Length: 235
Ligand SMILES: [Zn+2]
Image 1 (cartoon, rainbow, N blue to C red):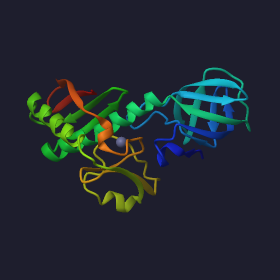
Image 2 (cartoon, rainbow, N blue to C red):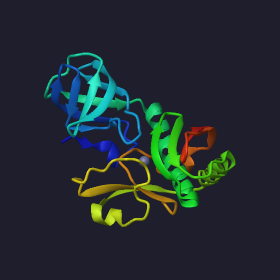
Image 3 (spheres, protein in one colour):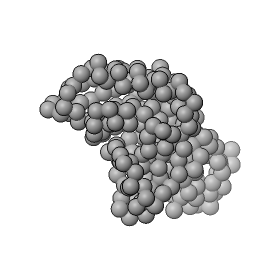
Image 4 (cartoon, rainbow, N blue to C red):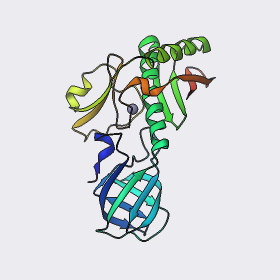
């Protein structure tokens, strides 16, 4: 099992690793990685894997049968190679800001209106939310964006830690977003925006709400009976 360093420290931009398997020449599994695999509404990380002066571009990262697989742009890496990984940090850091903003917005909306988030997709500079809410009113959504922006001006810490599944599930609203937690996981990773939100989550986040900056509502759509969709962007 690959050690997922991004879960321990989302600010790691580089690491050394050893190649543990190579499939079809370009699908690489490492003993440890800083590359986040696609999932939980967050896109995969890009960057490079370097070995012996040769640079391989990481074009996709996914989880297959529990293993984190890095797809590189060409063949050449071999089992046992000691490699150096480097993230495209500008890309990842924006995702961390967007992702953290998503927690705050979802939490405010959920606590304020009871809206259930039915889907969400984080992009580098844009976040999409699908949620169910009886009353649809763009002004209300703008109010929640304003409330979130107030919090992004404050020195509020974001922490992540593991809890036993039983303890985690005692926290009200711990699973607000449509992220899957297979029952075989005995421990859940909790991401806590202090005094704002606690969420079971396997993504990458910033450590302080001030790092988010400000967000703006892009678009709000009515998708039928109780289904709403909203897009916001980092400013
Ligand atoms: Zn998250």
